Length: 339
Image (cartoon, rainbow, N blue to C red; front, top):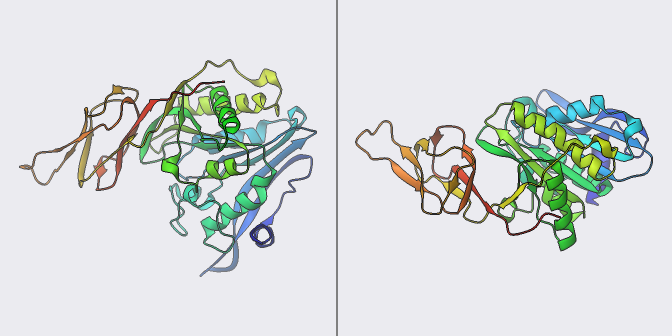
């Protein structure tokens, strides 16, 4: 029923079963004060030729993360359909309202798309986007590549992200694809066990599912964008959708994970002083940062300490913090192996 509702309520201008290159939209209904029968036009491209796997590529899940949408737009424009063996389904700005607003969450309903899957075909605008992707597009796929960065609130070491597989075989495929991407490190991230992410949803469909974190700070990183461009081509060549000679030479990345103690959280409202640059080796209990109280000069700053051993993987970008803000993220060594 849910799958039928997504298909019936969302009009799509491309045919997922047709060969060639198509660029269009799927239209999420949006009835608002100034447009009774309007839609959200989410861009989508289908590039299909011959036999081979279907790879779904997504960018713009969060609207303030830019490297993925840029690289996917280039891929849509530049790729020659004759070089494709199989099918590419590319959604470069999946959270279209958030991308236009440069926001992590949609300005329409203030919902985080990446905590919404499998969505709801009768829900809010963001829930409807998730439902269409989950119910209509995901069943077509063999491989899912979800391109993120740290957005406006975080700066993160450019890396491939490994979605924990639901079986040993799927997990091994995820680790291998992440290593092929070509980032210096790959990190196993389960988003604290949250099953509502796009990659977790894709994994439940049996797809090989990986993501990225491409720097952040609300800007476009020159180095991270170059890595993103190469990494996409590497993965597509690895799974056989593009010719093998497209892949660039890669070295095996260092493997890390985010443990339950990875995140350093502020308990206070103040200004954050971070003590170490990204990539610093740190230890649990070590002084990590201080929260200062600028309008209370007699009050001493509050010390924050790391809770895990590893490397400093992510740092909060805005200086102002409040209780509950994630200030620092530590990636710990992962005991698993790269295929």
